[in-house]
Length: 117
Image 1 (spheres, one colour):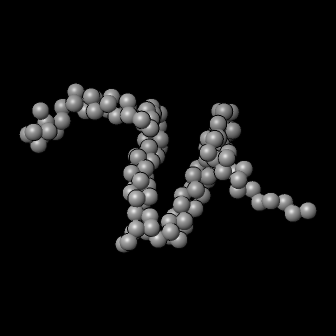
Image 2 (image 1 turned 120 degrees about the vertical axis):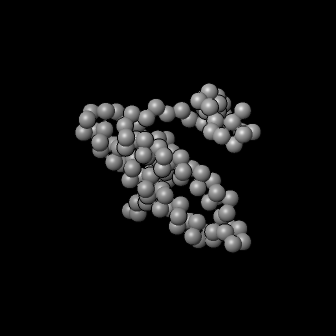
Image 3 (image 1 turned 90 degrees about the horizontal axis):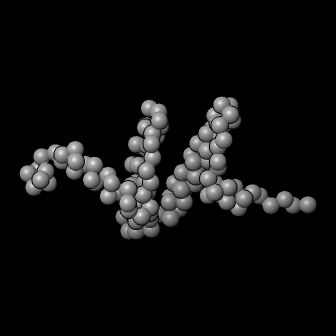
């Protein structure tokens, strides 16, 4: 086995690992159709890992203060919203139906400033 000898895992071992990962709770399987999508997926994968570590260090001694954490999360939301907006515009241009994720719809409803009359 590759793990014992320190050599690279075999193709079969890699495939087995991927299948087992796909069975895990919270996992997603995505077929990537474009080079840009592949790059975005690589960034997303690393972001997801970094965000989990960020949440673990939030408010910790020698970690990230709550104030800085709020700023980072707000910036992250802005990026997600901008990407969703871009995807909606691109989809409209090519007549492809874009479904805004429920989380973004919910955020937009709670983020609307109250009208004062």
